[in-house]
Length: 312
Image 1 (cartoon, rainbow, N blue to C red):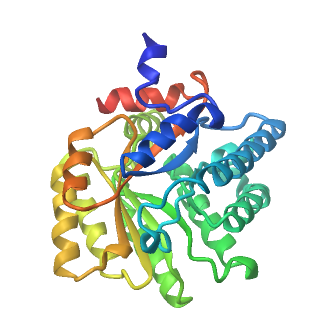
Image 2: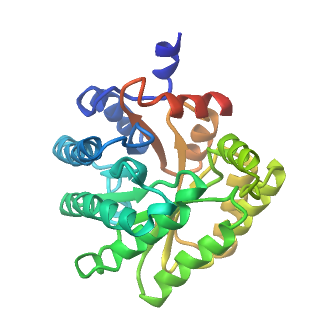
């Protein structure tokens, strides 16, 4: 039953096995971002392996997708067909706030190679956000790497920010201010967050302040505030509206119209295997949907499946 369940949310156990599903998504007029399952590396050998897997995915997909018929050549200038999502926890076995400087250096070394490979392939890379304990580290990694000379002209990189965090508006403002001060364009994938149970439990066990909103309506409100902030800065930020909430999507649609945001400055994203009626409705309205498509084996993907089960 678990194996059968996993096929609803995972496109394949490896990149080659996933090709047919990814091609079907493309033929349906949607796009996708590929994520490699695995919450953390437990050794440096495993971290190197994850890095090599990301690099191989870029090689395989860039070669395969080159022959796919274009959906919209003008749109692809702003939203490359090759899109990769990366979890920083997979790139260093001892990553964490207590090992901050070493974490920055070790992850940056591996992540830099991935950035180079994606850029050379003409693709887009987006850094996923995970537990709140890694939030500041992840933002520092992302901005620090984009600040390096070789990436200063590259506009196809982004980061996910979580609206269920009480710090979300400050996090959004920080990334926006960084982009504006350097006259850069970067992407923010705005999500509500998938680690709510974890964050609440860990904070309770350790006697820490809970970093997330504990009332769903408060998260929804915060998401909408962050939407407004990002869309108001569309000259520097490309927004990925990653939500299955009809209210949040409607808010985004209204805000883009009111703020006169061009279609090439935002897109809608949804998880593979979920919210099909919403995807259909947005497609009927002329929007291209990007599906978040995980690739990997069942055991490394178990935490991801549990999060999807909780959402269901």
